[in-house]
Image (spheres, helix red, strand yellow):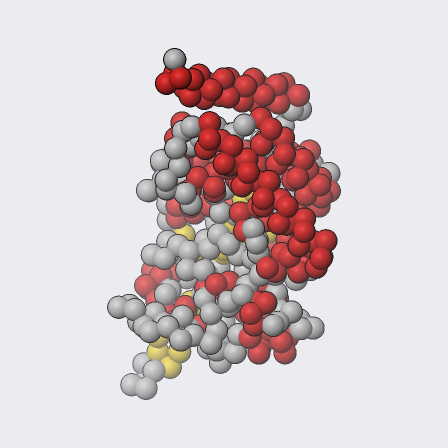
Length: 395
């Protein structure tokens, strides 16, 4: 008899979770998964060359320059106006010139919210040149000054090396410069706005922000952010970074204890140091990543809202074709039949929908979901307020 208790406990917990999910769906007001896109999916009214020519330094420019000093001698005085993408020519010692480019857009995050899926779907478009290294995490985590030894491709973590990552993309872009663009998707960028500027900000003792750095280096950039129900994102990340979990009642309780410990850690930090300082500490990282509203004001203080497309993962799952088309419109890219519904290379539909993960990962105890929902509720409310009081962000 004792040998049969454990499976029954798992079944009971799973049934309770299913009932709780069904009740939540009944209580959740109907959300149109595409109604929020029209106001955001507007193409750029500017050119890269024009924005760069008119650019004015942020008030914190000297500090930004200090902690990212290898950037500024590499960037051009002017971008080539014949290119939609940020590209410029560099004279070589032999008298020839080489074309250098930077990304036109970045998917800033958030990790475990579908960033890889969206990037690969967009890259199927003929006018979007896919980068071989989708997420180099250069602006956030790659340290300056760099002490890394060059890898076999010559990448050593300097800004020049980052620019060189796009040399192959530049060749393709040059074949149709008026329309072709490239982009990247380093998924910690959005949530690392206070924690990183070419390495941890606390270790560098700087008050520069990642948004300020990107405003100085790429003021023309188009940004896409995906946000998933923070409770589900936290649960997904927990299992993603754990490779030795088991499907037992003890494992469910272990996850609950982890959530309790992370929340206690965060609350204690805020009580002692305040929210901004704790966001800079970036710990506990996976709990913090779901506080979407805490980061958005720092981005909007540097970039206008129309340079950001904010997508809810659940809506993207429900209407992928419309969301991919909205992303293309946002980037100012012409329509292309079939983009959005086709399976993205290396990214099966179940990866986005979560079906595979729901079958594979442990369920969550009802008390754990309630604990996390209560924790994230104030941040969700702030997120809704920052997005026109749209209830979709309440989850």
